[in-house]
Image (tube, rainbow, N blue to C red; front, side, top):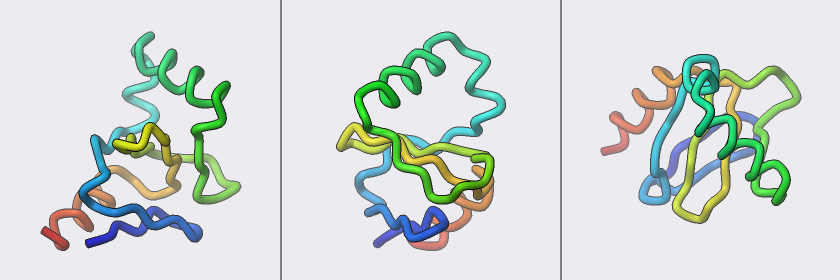
Length: 81
């Protein structure tokens, strides 16, 4: 099954490593480092031009920014499983 992240971004459910709240997780220096390296390497995919609320880390190494909340995304994954 697939998860719709907003915009025109859809990711295969099996490729999801984790769904993270951007506000809470960005307090960690490790998360900031992960996002910084992903941005520098061109591995960030944004679902919209708006301020992102969450990010999804995939097995492919891509980081998907989403305007949808983590709760909304988790509910959608739960509905698919």
